[in-house]
Image 1: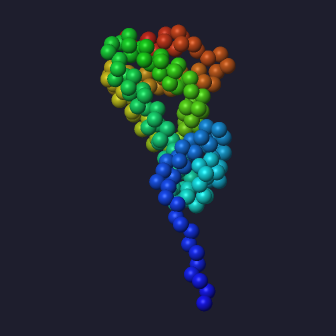
Image 2 (image 1 turned 90 degrees about the horizontal axis):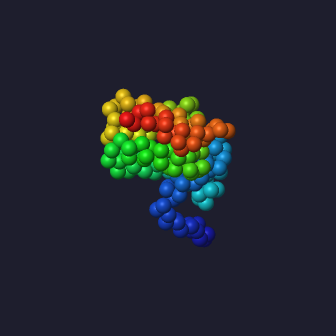
Image 3 (image 1 turned 120 degrees about the horizontal axis):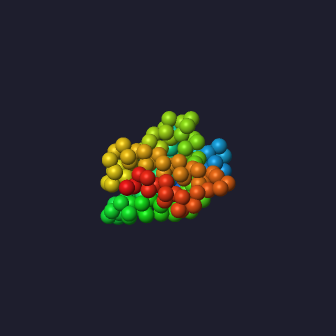
Amino acid sequence: MAGAPVRRARRFDPERRNRILAAALAVIAEQGVSGSTHRAIARAADVPLGSLTYHFASLDELLTAAFTVHVDTVAPRFDERMRAAQDSGAVLDYLVEHLTGDLLDSARDLVLMVELYVAAARNPALRAVTQDWMGRSRRSLERHFDPVTARELDALVEGLVLHSALSTDPMDADQIRHALARFAR
């Protein structure tokens, strides 16, 4: 009589999904969306490949969830800055700090932002993530500006970040302040 097959004990790992998402962001930051395969993410998360398909139906779903985590980390920082601003001078100061500090000072966050924008150009699910991020930014700006100005200012902020990040002659903080001051009166 043959013995019953030996079953491996199931590893209790309640943080596995979060570790996969963190690993996905790390892989995107290092290799870009195009280098973000199931295998690369599983290796970075130190989980079996099957764990990815257990938690996420597709690579697109995984990337969407990972970028959502990123937005959920970055957007509140901006909202905190706008909530703290008491007058137009403080709004301008906080906007400049947000651009030069929060967005441009973190190479990883900057790469993730650019990767999200590029991927969203082709992927409607990721476009929804960028749309959510823009909506959150606009609501934060609407604490101090009317909706039309908030939308225009949000677009200017994104453009300033991309120009500063990708230019061989980026704008300095004073130039950024001057551009923003036109809206923040």
